[in-house]
Length: 82
Image (cartoon, rainbow, N blue to C red; front, side, top):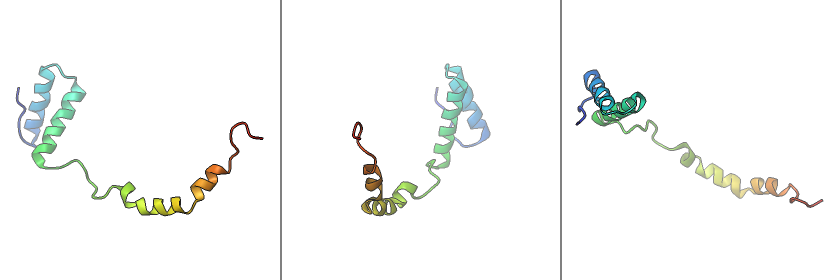
């Protein structure tokens, strides 16, 4: 069955009921209904503009270039070496 298009409570409830009627578990039906609601409202689901890992990539690269991470890693003796 086709799902209702819209972001209102009526469309959301109808979509949950439709998905459950075809045998989907309630949690999955609700997730699908939320997805349809997001599609209708035009939201992408991403609420931040820049990925924090990408934003801090230059800081990470500068830290890696300092040798601190590698020196710390190499400070421990190899397995079996005494």
